[in-house]
Image (cartoon, rainbow, N blue to C red; front, side, top):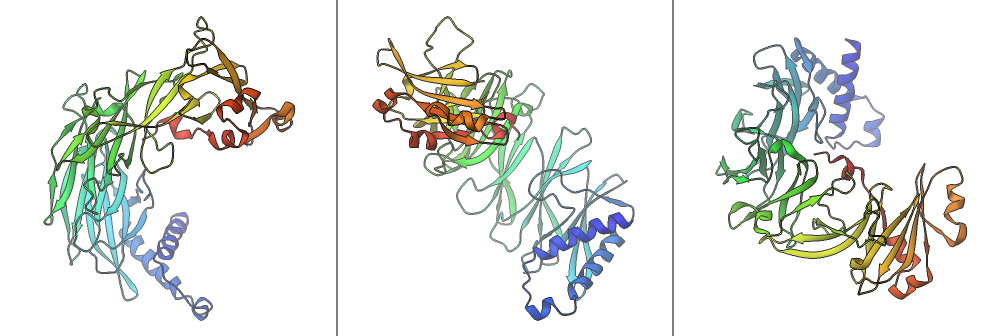
Length: 440
């Protein structure tokens, strides 16, 4: 019991601090009135928790067992307690409100499921207050259900929608400054491709958009993110595995008053094969606020017979709402070494790489691809003397971690292509971990 009360106190302290209350110096050194608030709220929660256990959401930004939100827009924060009990509808969201110095348990939302998966508070219409979006895991741990609740002045919850999902996101797709619910559903059978739909609020009620097909079954989803098309319009980028050898990205946007799979409008498609067992996902690689999609181009090797030393150039492009491609930039990603280089588009297509143990020699072919000259070498150094190795023999250090030092050296021919130390330092980046894991 003592451990549980300590846990509750920590949650309440965090919640009350987040309320934004400002105190003067006299108040800070006066009678600690807030301690009474802690005791009162803790007492109310203790009473409600009889026969229950805490059941904090498992994912997302809101993973606390006790959370705060102004659900009906009256300017007063409600406290939400996420719990579980042994009953036919075991998941409970208990809502408390402060009245003077007391905390009153005013509502309980009961639902089926084994755990809360994800909880969000969003503005889906022009009415005051926040909509409560709750994702729950069902008993089989595969099927999940998302529900949306609104609250009136009396704090009575109204269930607006309930739908099964593989993944859901809250996003403003139609640009009206209000949030919609994007839901990726499983198909009717395990082999059917997934489908997606958008749920938005209109005149106080949820309306469902048209349904669109995805490229793969919903359980093949590897990564999903919200980003911008080339024209700045919001879109959902959902990457799915194809036979574990490639990634295909569905780009879903609101076009001509309907949900559209923009990638289906692109004749070339968005499928990308793996690079040495690594998936290559859409990302904002040039940090301009627009998401780019990858297109792999196999480099012309120095030694055609050496099939094990194959390297790929990545052409990155953004998409318009009409499905057209807009070239953005080129990179060379070395997943094994954990780094990548941004490349000058004037010579990127002529790049080739040769692996030599812990270093990589970069060459440029002439326009006819008959001769290649070395311009740059990247070193991936480990061991106790890696810093010294990084500056030996006219090398310069690009980046250092606790275990690895990345260094480079330039050939005299690099200057002919405008390749300088400063440009290489700016072009060198480490590969983010989520590129490797593909977590959704």
